[in-house]
Image (cartoon, rainbow, N blue to C red; front, top):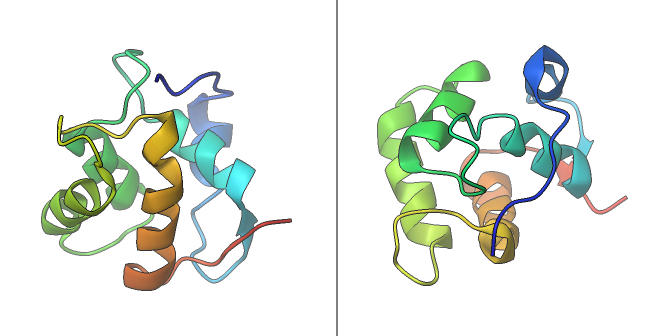
Length: 102
């Protein structure tokens, strides 16, 4: 299942700049989709690493490997739409991002 839609660009990327502010799950998904640079509908480890670097998370390569491993239920090395909730859980509990349901 592909990750659909994206507002992309700087607006999508800036949503997560401040890790101290809360974002909704939908805002997080839109932000993440803006890093799908090859537009294949999936988030690769490199794309996730770029997203983490955009919010100045240290050890972004290591953390992106951990995030992919945590959320990639089918083991294909990519995060698809149906695996995003696991990535949200990872971001909340292992990266300290504040993501709300509303």
